[in-house]
View 1: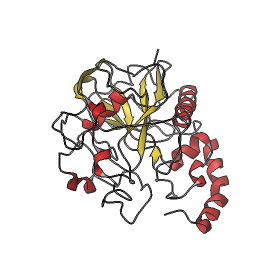
View 2: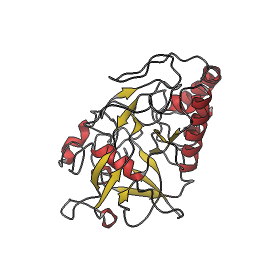
View 3: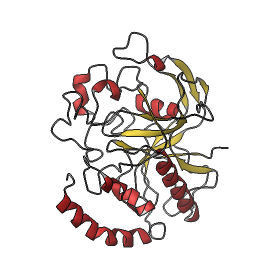
Length: 307
C-alpha cells in the first residue's frame, strides 16, 4: 500500500509489536535450507557448509529467514559492447574472474527485514513509498546498508549461523553484474527487447512509459519473473548499492573491487522511476555514500570475509 498520512499513523502505532518481534531475532529460529547439499537442520555453520553446489541453489537458514541464492565462481565479460543500444561510456568491456562463490539475496532487503535488524523506519521521511513487510527498504544510504550488513554479521555469528570467516556485505560491482547476467550477454538477463522488461521488473514510473506508470513507488519484492539463476528484481524496482567506490573505468582481472577512495559509491539495476536504459545489466549508477531516496535500496551478499 502506498503511504498516506492516515496509513502512516496506523503503521507507526504497530511498530512496537515489530520491535517485540525483533527482540527474538537470533534467539529462536527454525533452520530450513533448500538445495541438494544443504547442511543439516540445527548444525552450527562452518566454511564447508557455506559452499553451494550449483548456480541457483537456495537456502534460508538465517535469522531473517530470507532466501539466499548460490552464485558460483566463474569468468565473464563485464560491461557492454560498443554496439549495445543506449550504452554509456563507462561500460567499456573487461574480462573478470570471480574466484569465490557467494550467496546473494533473492530479492532486495525488505522493510520487515530492515526493522528486524536495525529497528528503524527510514522510509517514513518522504513520499513515493509503499508500506508493508514485503516492500523494499528505501531511503537507505550506502553507509546505512553497510551498517545493516555489519550488524547482521555480528548477530548471525553469535547465533552460530555464520562462520567467522564469512560475512554479510554488499556485493561488489563485479559480483552484482555477474549475478544479474547469470550467464547471459544481452542488454537484460532475459534478452535485448525492453518491451519484455515489464515481465521482469518495475520501471518507467516517471521516466518512460513502463510497468510502474501510475504506480509511482517501489513495489513488493518478488512479484516479477526471475533471471536464469533465480534472482528477482535485478532489473528495476530500486537502485541497489554495491560495495565499490565508483571509477570511470571498470576494473577487470580477478575479484576486482574498485579504487580504495573516491567521492561516489556504485549503485546498479535502475529503479521504478527510470527508463529501461537504466535497468540494463551493464548500466552503472553512482551516488554519494550518504544519499537516500525513494528508489534506493540494496540486497545482501554472504561472502568469504574480506581481508
